[in-house]
Image 1 (cartoon, rainbow, N blue to C red):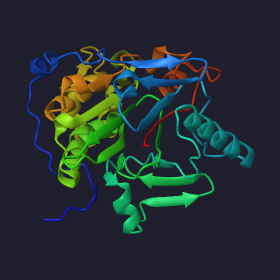
Image 2 (cartoon, one colour):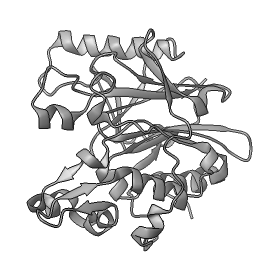
Image 3 (cartoon, one colour):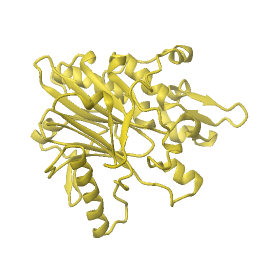
Image 4 (tube, helix red, strand yellow):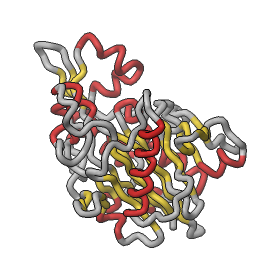
Length: 309
């Protein structure tokens, strides 16, 4: 049966009934490989992807806010666009006339760029800021087509895989609380298996810093509104305060569980252990800026990108 290549998260998902004690015994993959920061170039790269052939990748570091604001001037649009172009050049993606950016719409969909383009899908939007795809995970097999994702406290995943025929697949995954609650990592691996016949053991998955459990607090009165149908899923990945009823969400625990269930080799996984909340001089954090009321600190979003060259 032919599968629609833009599909919601609940396809192919099996219920996860592992008790918390099992999750806590999962191997700690977080420090296996972390990103190496080049302060002079204002970029960072994953050691695990450094020697992969024909793959350019990187994470912006201290390169300014990469996100467009809701109320932006033409001057600011141009400034952000220049920052992105400079970032792509520094990680080895030159002449990137039309990078493809994942739009942050929280639809938890997984897509293939070539399929969307062929179908002239309305998931692709073009405007003066660039080309945007409405998806939480996006993959491509087209060379020299940079995929870009902008995040703050969410995990940003860079994916590299080989098909049995030797074709290269690269992609990005937006893995925040919403997407992880929708099993975005497992869905993405299922997608790679169905569309490209990729063996999970041939997938390299690297994830940027995110908000740590200590600072990821959801107040008791907001639990149902914020977590919605994923409340039971997050219950086993949270510490609940007995007095206040507040939840401390553990996104790393959820990410590690999904990577394990997806059967990606531990040696092919990198989760940077840094906490964006505490990295005031390194990465933006929406939670830090909001909670501490310090707009002078780094705010906005940083960018990550990958391309098959």
